[in-house]
Length: 202
Image (cartoon, rainbow, N blue to C red; front, side, top):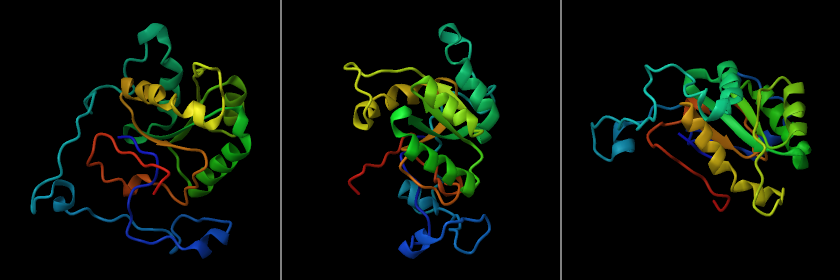
């Protein structure tokens, strides 16, 4: 399971709500998860939602394959042991160029009380910045072919990072750091597709 943004919900976002600085769990302002009729996931009335094609069975240890590739994935496994609720995690990829956005992203996650969130840090400074805020970080020193560290240049690295999560058996909701979550997105996920994505063009 992978996505760039929050799943569908039954309530509409109101611009005036954005002016309120505090989000409280249990508030009437928050959306409520909705049940998904089977027909919405299969197209056939009365049919059961299809089973996801998981790389690792739910009866296998989690995380898994941590010692492979010379132990490279062990730090990721350590982070997932801390926050991998129900084998799922919300993850963002960041470097030191966007600390302002990253800080706001982490503040929003704390206010929304999203417990299973972490950051993939592309440099040591980012890893330290995230860990100092009490959020697990997986240090993954990837670079583009040109060495460019701009936002758009590093976006292509996310596919390699996504593969790391899948190798250890995690379902990941991959988010940009310029996204603000008002509450945990996990109750709203339909879990009816092996891979889902969102583009900025919507």
